[in-house]
Amino acid sequence: MTNEVDTIVPGNVRTRAEIKRIFGGSTQGGICPAIDERSVNLYSDPSVGEANGYYDGWLAEEDELGPIFEYTGAGKSGNQTFAGLAGSGNRAILRHAEQGRTLRVFTQVGRIPNSDTKTHLYLGEFTLDALEPYVWRRVHGEDRKERGVIVFRLRPDGKVQRSSGNVVPRAEKTTCELVPFEEVTAATLQSDPATTGMLPAVKKGRDKARSLRKAAENAATSGSFVVSEAFNKKMSLRSSTASHIAVRREAELTRTYMAYLQSVGHKTGAFQIKVKGLTSTLRTDLYDATEHALYEAKGSSTREDVRMALGQILDYSRYVRTREHTEPPKRIILLPAKPDLDMFELCQSCNVEIIYRSENGSFIGEAVPVD
Image (tube, rainbow, N blue to C red; front, top):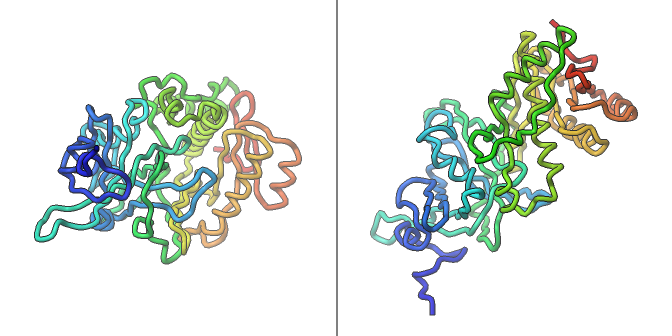
């Protein structure tokens, strides 16, 4: 018969020493990989997170795939990273599937009576969301300095412990903050980054096309998130190849167009939006500060994707304002190819423009800026 101290199931409360005996890892730090136990143990302390400008926990809003637990990466000061020693813990989370490790989440709930020893509630096993494994977010830390953090999106992998005490606090008011454009750039951390989903190289042509080609060449050096075969196998999502391709194409399309905007002297960024009463954080695809133009990009030009983009940009544009621009922004949908003609009519009826990429790599649309 298995003794209680020899096993830990969701809902159990244990000290870190007891957790280490079962799942390995360290008794120090927030992200604790365990090679022999094939585990990555994630420790969340609400008091520490709040002091550093973020909250870990369940989102109250679920999507069609179910619940999401947000976990903020390692690094208490400055921008978090995947690189070097400082990024080793974040890499361990990102690569858990291809390395055959299980993510296990624990949250600090108390202390042993008459002791400084903390106790932790075991929430269960998780895996990274397949299509959006993490997002970049801007927070204001304890010193009030703005910094970028990595927020991992974790999906339950079996039975988990959920309670109201582990839910991200709802926003007390609606806020919309202009932040630097940041994208998922994990290709260099994958064991097989060959399938980066790059868009075709831009051919020679007009000055605008040459600028776009240069932007695409620069973009190719930075990498974009790819899903390795091991990752796909862990997620059991081999049938969703088209979705993965669309995600990669969207990232490449956005980055290439942003590079073009910058090449003609435009300032770019994105908006981070929190809506009163919600726990989730919204983030726009791209914002042209020079033109006060908001972009929503899609990796395909199908009717379904255009309609989705239209809904998203109508939603986000309600909040996008700056000190210089108190009026609503221009609303533009960015597509990898020309959509059906009636999609232009649909978007025009909502005062939304379309920009799409032609076969020779240039971008077409009345809203495309020129030198």
